[in-house]
Image (cartoon, rainbow, N blue to C red; front, side, top):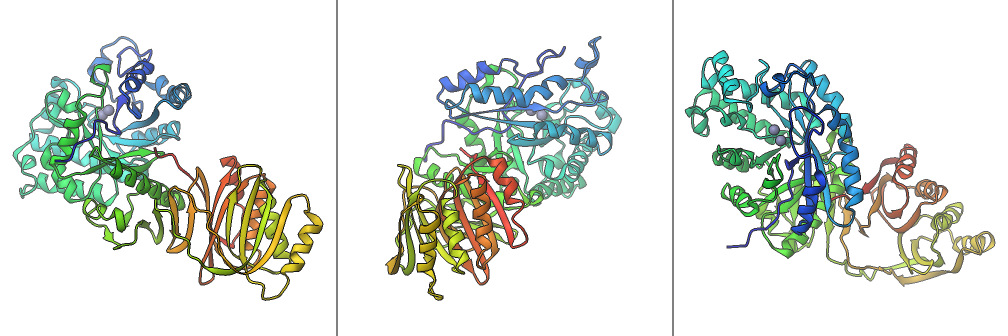
Amino acid sequence: MRKLNEFIWETHGIHAGTEQDHVKHGIDKLEDIVDKAIEAGNPSITFIIHSPRLTNFRYTAERDTNVKFIRGNKSYLNYPKRIANLREKYEGQINIKYGVELEWMGPDLGLQWSRSKIFQAEDADYVIGSVHFAPEGLPYDGSKEEALELLKLRGSLEAYWDGYFNEMIQMIECFGDMIQIIGHIDLPKLNVDMPEALVNFETSSHPLANKFRTLLELIADRNLSLDVNMAGKFKGVGVYPVQSILRRANELEIPVCVGTDTHHVRYYGLNYKERLEYIQEAGYESYVSYSKLIPENRTIYDDHDLKVKYTVLNKGIELLNQRLDDNQRRIIPDYSFGGSFSEFVDIYRSATGMGDYNAIRIRKWGKSITVTNEIPKNSQRIVNGLFSEHLDEPGVISSLFNTLASEGINVETARLKTNNDGTAVAFLSIDNKNGKVQSAIDFINGTDTGLFKDLTYQENAVLPNYYRAGVYLLEVDGVGLNLALSDKVILTKHHNAPGVLLILLSALGSKHINIKDLRLGKLNDVGYSALAIDGDSNVIRNLLSKLGDQYYEANLIEFHSF
Ligand SMILES: [Zn+2]
Ligand SMILES: [Zn+2]
């Protein structure tokens, strides 16, 4: 038996409190629980908050106060700021994630209200869609009396649950890409029984069973994940969802995320192993957490080597997601695994193998990226090229490309390395068919003499590699690049013609963005570039949006996954 982990990267985590509200909900002193997490040696902690509700949707306890208030409205507005302050205060000590539990309140005003609230959580790590209230204005998770009133209105247990699933399906259709996760899918069991048709939903021919199967398929097809939520267990009705639902979800390859959904400090960090056993029992060996709405895969096992492999996988998923248009993002992509990553083929059943190729390929919508943590071997490729030793400053590389372009010389690939002493070296493989390289060197020596220490054209030279340990972007769309990933990377796909790359490099030079490494590749007349850079993200995004039609893609990739 492999040892299970003693920690969970939670999603539906700790409910941040409603502060000055008259009916308390969640934990107000967030510092207390962060301190507790640090003391326990945990690498991360996850907060969540309910989006505020319309006044028609209130629990009895809220109606019973004589004060009119919209629960959590003010604390919801303060929430991103509170988290930002926490992140600042605890920087370097613990990773702090936060998300929103978006309330479903019907497709009319409720939907517009939720859409208006989602802006408040623009930088959130995840959004869970949850149904707590029936359209009749009664909660599924309020008092027994409220549930019995709704049961009476609907007439039968089957109709009670049928209504809940209808609302779930409508929520998924309407919320669309606003949510990544479905909250506590069998929440009504808190107050009413599950009818026979639901207990045996896998085999029953009852319309309710069929509807529930449809709901699960919809979740799978929409690339949503399922919240495995301990609140039900604390309340004595068992984990949401029951094992049979979780087994079915696993068959449908629906990812799960795990959380306590706790509103009290005393439930923090309890039973990590038991929770992982619970998903393992249903067949899961991994679960997901989220960073900036992008799913991260986590192993249930306490296995260092496996965790390292997941880090490579997660970087790849982040990379691919940031290449996609906004409306295509946040998906669970398709995978291929080879070499030391081959064990993932069993974990992700729809994945394919790549034999001895020690890498992970991640793909969706006709785009792919290939990553590994193995240092690429030197190809010993013999090329003609320009060797340069120069000042490690923004604009120097673009000046080099500029002069080569002025002589009609196209750069085929580049190798850059900083010496970490204010100087850097570069080797650009070029074709010197027009014989103008020497002229280009003379021009550089004439105009940029202070920037370059050495500039030599070499024929039949071995292409240097300058490789170091790290996670490597081996390929984009199958085109070899071999860039060591750093915090910020630019990826472009462009028309491969002289001068096109110069647009990007000049744009970066003009804003003093330093290029730390640069890799070029091509397939037919399409060029690819991967650049490791330093600089302000907003400035970079702005200039990438203005490169023009020759650029089919130009993305800034940042890594938040931990
Ligand atoms: Zn909830
Ligand atoms: Zn919750």
